[in-house]
Structure formats: C-alpha cells, structure tokens
Image (cartoon, rainbow, N blue to C red; front, side, top):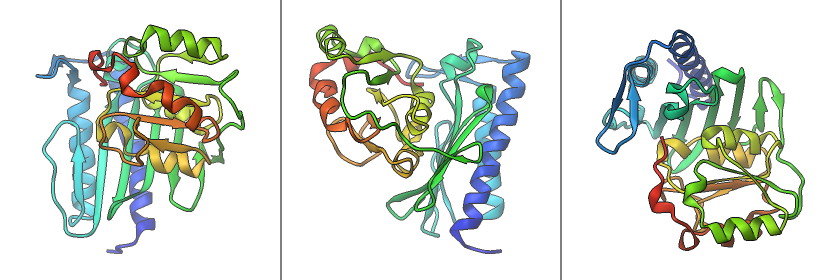
Length: 264
C-alpha cells in the first residue's frame, strides 16, 4: 500500500463522488428523517451514513490517517495526514429540496490543507484543488474573477441576518451586489469566477476545510474575518484577492449581528 499524497487525492475524489451518490439518492427520493441536534441544527440519516462510509474508506486504505467530521468524534492518526469532512454542507437546503447543498472533503498534511473538494451533486458540479496543481471544475481549470474593486462586486452571504443593516446599505452604496445561498456553493462560485467574494459569519472547521486550497489555487484569498489564514476561527471570508482588503473591514464581526447565525 502506497503512502503518497497522490493516492490520497485520488481517494478524496472518490470519497466525494460516493458522498454525492449517496446524498443524491436521499435527495431525489425525499427519504429523509430529520432530527434536531443540541445546537438547534438539523441532521439526517444521510449525513450520518455518508460520514460513516467515508470514515470506513479512509480506515481501510490509510488506517494511520486522522479523521475529523461533523457527526462523530475525531479519530487520531500517526501518519501526519488528517481528513476533514462535512458529509452534507447546507443541510437546511438539503432537507427543503434546494439543490445547493454540498459534500466537502479536505486533506490536511501537517498544518497545511493540501487538497480539497466541493461536490455539488444537485448542480452536477465538482470543484477540487491540490496544493501546487491548480483548481478545477469538472475537469476544466478555473480562476477567480479579475474585478479590482467593490463597485460591481458580487458578494455571497449565507445569512443576511448576520449583517448590520447599516453595513449592507454602505456596501450597496459602493456598488456591491449581495446574494444569499452561500454555504459551500458560495465558495465554489468565487473559485470559478462567478462571484467575487463570500462571507461566513458562523462556520465550523469542517465547513471551511477545503476552502483555503480551493480558493488559493484558483488565484484568490481565504482568511478568517480577523485576517488570519486559519479554518478554526468560527468564520471565514474568501475573495478574488483583489477586493479582500477593501471588503474585510466592512464585514468584521464588530460591525455585525453574527451571534444570531448558525451555519449548517
């Protein structure tokens, strides 16, 4: 059994594909049993079954790898690699029949995210990136937009309730176009150049893990809302890089109602 990153990347793509098949089957048949977790967020049988399947795939192929997911306790490893998975990102969309949910898989080597994939089964879109090898959508290399300023920029937001009304008005006055249905879909749109930024006021590490490598390999920039290049700050922002420094001060948590939002 080989221990190369390349083999893990192949496994990660296969895992995302399998997660897409499993989630699409539930999505198409509407065979969902929805429960509410302690934090008020929904979870379905599909979330749990997909995560278990992905855990089994890693344990079978690379038993020394760590694993972190949304639904079950973390598993430690000793190989230097760790998988970070969200079986269904955007469960609220998923349970309502909105096809903008995603399956997220990321691979961490040491302290660095070296591979990530956003699978959007309902849209037939797979965006993935490996460190040093570019960002790809359905086999075609993609890049962020070249919009240089906030005027005319499209910025995605998972929850507009998180935003201070005054900030929304100020951004609109500068020509920013705000759109919702964010979650992983927003990050995919930024990576592909269809949107110029996305802001997440409430997000876990498993929501954000694929985003640094995907956005950066597409030529953009990902940080927390305080400007750090981390996935565990509880929030995130991704842009084409050109508008990052202009947008960041406006959406800093001090200017928002971010405590009202819950990302699922």
